[in-house]
Image (cartoon, rainbow, N blue to C red; front, side, top):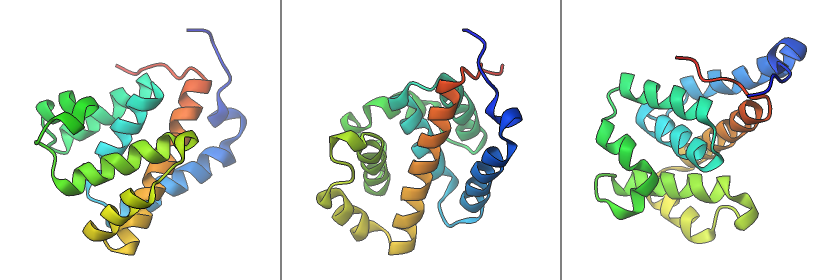
Length: 146
């Protein structure tokens, strides 16, 4: 991997703003499981090795099972995720693939049936934040930490 710029060193205020979003997410109502499912799934879609590695480890530390992590890429084909989790994963995919129309009205209705407006807003912020982190990590070739 070629050496790239280090945005955290060149533009520390930008990283400070990103960490502000992370602070908000750490204090919001989203469960750790929901947050990590969002982070891993969006990172899989975006192909961000750094973030997949970090958030898979975080999920395991929070008690997520290896089986669910292994099957996350095929979540639609299994029944090990709850209806709420499947809705969050669908939201993650639609928002991450925003160029394919973004969050559909049907998925929004599913989300509104499972969660209150605040929780839906927090899900959207979490998806948006990990997508921004993915783009930073991929664009600057951040190496995987072992």
